[in-house]
Image (cartoon, rainbow, N blue to C red; front, side, top):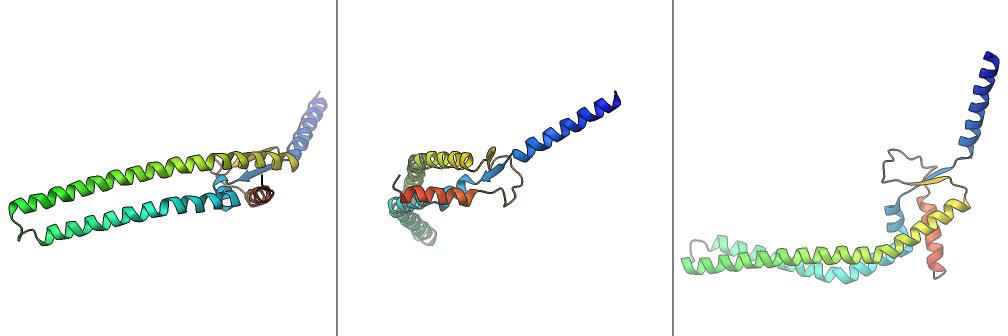
Length: 172
């Protein structure tokens, strides 16, 4: 009976070893793929062209506010009460307008980013699925998840970037 039980355990361990030997696991950084692939670079250039002028305008507003604040501090004693109150109201209005503009800018930036990223992310997922099937992977994990360590041998981020770049060059 002990021999049969021992053989059963050995057989079970052998089958598990074979099952594990066939498993191939990969890991990919979606952010790394998005930043390094041609689709992501084109999106970044488009975003920069669209939002850089708005960013510079916000910076000009901030500089004007700083200048007004300096004037208020420097002229504090020289200004009459009414003139001082007018300057303070103007300062508060400009600060409020600038804050509103900054919030609107961030919202536009976020909405545009999501709009442009969505089709790229769909392509990335499609390429990862095709790459995984073609190369015999049992599982491909996203590195930002709960994964605490990933060996470089398992990281397929650059391979996925290469596949995406081939897809873009092919015009798909």
